Amino acid sequence: WGLFVSRREGKSWSKPAPLDILNHPEGKTGDRSPSLSRDGSILYFASDRPGGKGGLDLYAIPRAKLNLK
Image (cartoon, rainbow, N blue to C red; front, top):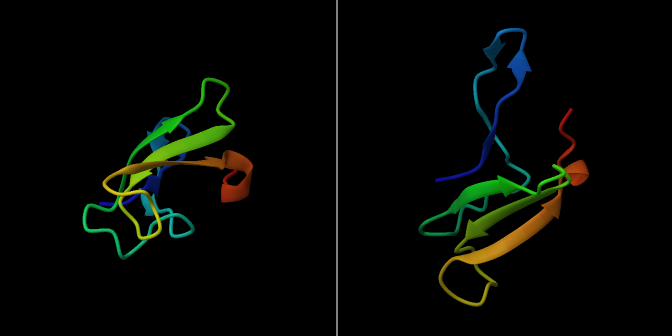
């Protein structure tokens, strides 16, 4: 599992590329279930990466920090 990004290019979409800035290799389940806030400024996702509270924890990151165009 992991998070990926794809961009609309005209009438088609680009090939999905991993969001390496977010994906953590040590989670057994991994990073999953991405969702944007209503205004598109915050990306929320679930992860079982080390350092969480246990199980799948929720994380949020401002979309601007992802350097997506």
